Length: 325
Image (cartoon, rainbow, N blue to C red; front, side):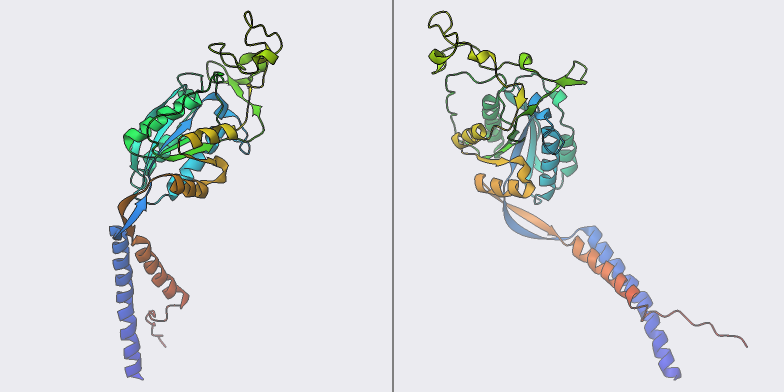
């Protein structure tokens, strides 16, 4: 009996030393963030976000298109594999401004997330929104950086395009996507004063409803009210319109994407769909990625502690106090 008690006491002392030692070693291994290197093909991207006034329309479940774009892209970047690179830029008027050249998504996630969530319509230096020109400028920028392009916009040209067809883009496309922000049904565009305070919505008399009367008139000009071949070759039907409202211009953006070897996707389809479409329309490159073993070591340490707690300390029994008679 004494021999059995001695063995039990020895076992108790051993586990009291061994278990904390094992847990400590596992915790140290987790802290070292060891990993297994492996080859993987990844795609990078320069993400350009439209910050013009129509992106303030609140038709994304009560949120503005810009807010929805920031949140969706933040979630998409957070889910991207380590080793991939993302750059950020904004678009307004006819060109894009690069804020961050492509950086690694894991090492620089805080910079990416902070810059993305800090985008604001007040950063715009002009009120115009020339989508075609801005898209082509962004494509050239992405090509210069050697990455595909993701261009986020609702597709509303302001002012409207000239009647003459724009020339097709030249040069090789770096690949990528156009992400359409907004809903099909046109909504009112919020209006702000010079101090950035919202003061209502744009009305029909606040915006230009047709292209500037420069160059050749539209093909149907002769059928328009007020048409005169010499005095009024454009007619008068372009004086009214609904450009003070904004909806997602799906057909227009799909045409732009097709002409530039890009894919098109509605932004509200979510991060997983963005990743699938990017994989289908963007080139990949081999990257050596280190898969971290820290979660494995941390989980093992936690399981050991939980196992000991659940079993009711079978192996570690506190010393009994001898009762005094």
